[in-house]
Image 1: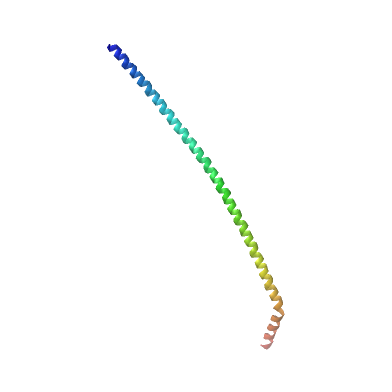
Image 2: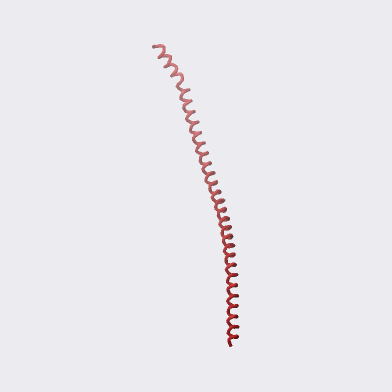
Length: 111
């Protein structure tokens, strides 16, 4: 009977050894899957980051273009107002030039 007991113990030890090998193999596969999952996650993160940058760049371009248009319109308005003021001043000078010359001549002659 001891030979039969030894045979059962040997069978159990062999089964346990096989299970240990299977467990080691599974651990290796799990480690490899973790690496692959990490690489895949990083790839997705990089893609999303790039898309976010593209979206932010487009949005910034829209804001910059709108600001340029507004600044150009404001500049044009200021230019037109300046032209109008200059025209007004020029016409006032032309209208009062004779009188100013007479006043200056009169003042010089009195002195």
